[in-house]
Length: 135
Image (cartoon, rainbow, N blue to C red; front, side, top):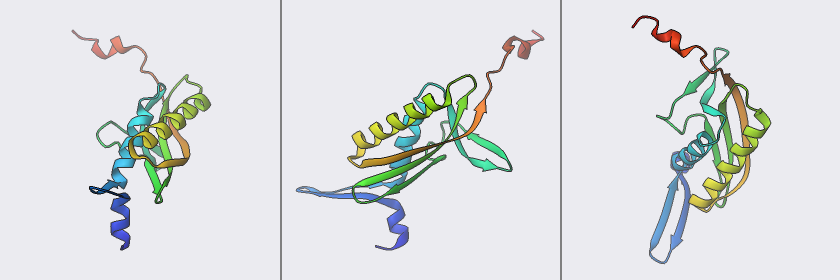
């Protein structure tokens, strides 16, 4: 199997009826969705660009997620932006639990680690009424 095929194919399982293939992108999306379900997570970050964390919305859930997948195990790196005022270690622990559970339940892979990288803090916009000063 060449390197490009390896990137697309994460897990292939032979059954009595044929094979089941799970793509790398699918595992990334599962992890991204599971992370954003956690209270205190504002969004995913694609990493630091020019010293500023670039935050991504729900459009592309695989961004901000890196996965390494073997035949039966997976390791995940998450890059997130958290809400100001939340206790970051608690949010990170809930992300780890939620991502591990989601991937293992949906794919059958054993998640050996989930590394959470907090790339930024989003502040709640105070004074939302000020946005509509003229009515």
